[in-house]
Length: 328
Length: 308
Image (tube, rainbow over all chains, first blue to last red; front, top):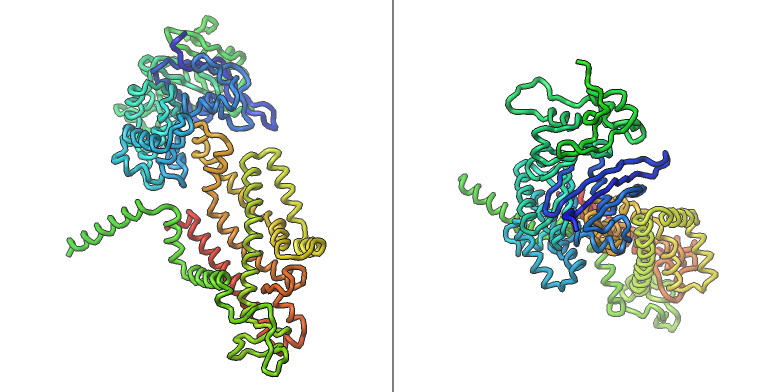
């Protein structure tokens, strides 16, 4: 038995539209070890949220996972039926969402919503569930939880609601918590608190976290490993410290360079030129080649595989023998 | 001075905080509703009408079914309003006030049952169509389109002549033809709520579809449903009156506001005996008006976009 909690192997997910099949995820492979936090970064439309929804088996129609496997504790989630999947959702794998303002049902008190999960998966009776709900609220740092348990979502601030979401997601002590941009909608001080809370609870409850974000700062603070996604592909997978010291893929390097620093005063922020190609006009070779400053003819013709390089994994021809060193 | 102001604002803040804590969604809506004068007036009239309907046997001065004889032993027909008969008597010598009170009972209950039927059908179909989408949606919405195309009054008239006209048939018929607006409304609302993150969140927590639809989607669209059902009640009263007036709805001698107007088909009555047709006419008008006022008030009170 390996200590990999979640292993995504060559997952391909796409949308069946009127224009034909559009591959949104192309052979995505990720591994998450028990007790670790894996950060997934990428810009909008890079497929990071779709990856997490694929794990939950909640891909919006007309999307569908068409290839690969998602191994969770050795079971392939893609082969489970809806009934079996429902038993896993919220119980073994939980998810928290980006928008705490809209992720709670406005017509129920926060207590009722947490109790619903507990009663659904653990068949607790009302009293026990309520006591446990109050415990969970206390655990996520909500002051006077005995009173707050009867509050409605609109009576809580964004940070408080996100705490409630975390309480809800962790109430059944799942092995895996998927956090889809959990701090994006919060202000900066609250962001830090929520991140700290998640990391603290991860230690206490022995939960692994799949952290999806577009904020490299969040990754630096919270993740153990990082996967960089671009246009539906994992272009780099590395240990966090190493990644920040020496990003390998030209896209990762571009991302790093576009972070403004305090030391330098620049007239303009550095950007990666161009935009992500749409699914309809994806280049044949490397998906990043339209925006890459170092591309060669090889890049346009053939997609690079994900290869091991100095302990990391990177998907770029630069690190293979087929790369022709530049004449300069 | 400034200390006072501070103190005052402090208590104000405390009050808002405590009121925030106490108020559920319903209580908040009620607060907003109370501020709407017109809606409150409508609500009071409606309450009055409902109370008279409920307590009809206690309030009405005469039996609405039996004719009254005068001192000479003749039927006291078409008597103008007097101390004895406040609103006069009709063509068969029955007390109009009593019939009006009992008629309200019939008209209101027909409308309520009809609306309960149409709301039930409309909400159920709308939920299914909106949540499940795909072919379920296509089938339900096409059927709705077809039902909308029916000329309602003709349909109701022909159906009610085929069945024996009775109160219950009127209720069922009105209910069966008037669910389409509700279906469309509910479907639209479900499409909106279905994409909300909290619905995705409960799915991600492993809840099944049936529970999601009824426990998480439905309560969130209760506001527009309530408003629509209220306005539909007004419409049902009108339809019932029209049917009864035409003689295919509630049958004599059972009084309803619609069939009380039947006497007004005679020019003589229309011109010279306004006490026979004016009371049911005014009753219908008042009821519809007050229901619509309440409906509009509810819409403003329940719509979160108009919050504060």
